[in-house]
Image (cartoon, rainbow, N blue to C red):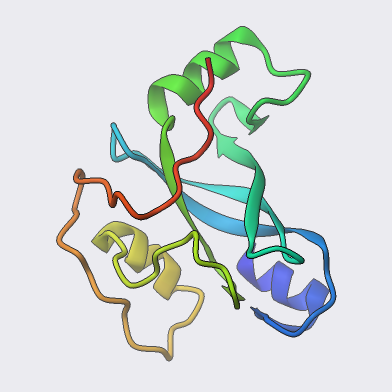
Length: 143
């Protein structure tokens, strides 16, 4: 997904581009379960990278969180496996203070490192399967 994103946009660094809303591949981790999966997050790049939505790539198919066509079993799956969640997209976005790339759980860092094999690994905050980072944005809670 990362390589396709770079191919489509011609870059993996979104700092000086004039995009408003854009969708990026991301690694998503359920805060309560530690479950790690892949998804696509929608960000508003004209703001400070505000998070507008998430598509989860799951064994049940692609599930849009809060989407109008979400089925009860899909909603339950997201609530059970992911909600609340943290995410780390695979590209670089300047001015986004919502995602803490300085404290990435080890298993998430391993996935992100596949996108940038020549860069040093991000610092690990010791969070293997638990211990949420209180400074990172929660994914929206579904009721």
